[in-house]
Image (cartoon, rainbow, N blue to C red):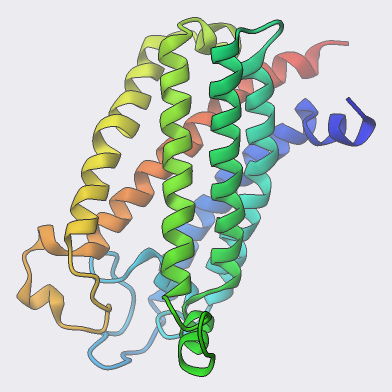
Length: 264
């Protein structure tokens, strides 16, 4: 391992990345929603303020729905950059010393999925709704062939969720991983949380989200559709399930990271 690689996955740097991820994402959700309440009414029938029931998560990155879209766009880009080193550090823990082939394959699959998801999350922060619409209106094929923001977000979220599923499967196959590598005192609870989140709740939220009509927030769909048909509502629950998985990893790493930092 060269000096640069050792620095990137050093315990001190990974701990900074974990703390930065938790703080940044929490600020995005709390501060972003609060500041979005200053948004005036419009376009069309979009009411003033910001309501997670009728506003998509990515609306916080659009100037049409918040006066401060850079908070969301910069925030998710920063989180993606922080989580990539954390992913490689987890890969190192998952492989361990002289590990078997299955362990290496699952660790590699987890890394590929998560890194791909976070790279596309960076693109989501760069290509917000306004730029995506500009490409659709002003450019010719292939730049106008799809909703770029929605497509990039779909690829990003899918890869991150699948990566979380692989991590959950890994923790179920290798029973002592959570206890020995992450130093979790009650690994059963951790495994239950991961299984419920990635194998039960996330598929339910995703299925209900994809079954809903993808209408715009400025439409009057919340007056004509039942709540279980509100794509915005299920998107927020889907994002919360991703947050649970991300925070679980970051918080679980604190104990082994602190143990390594205490060693002389």
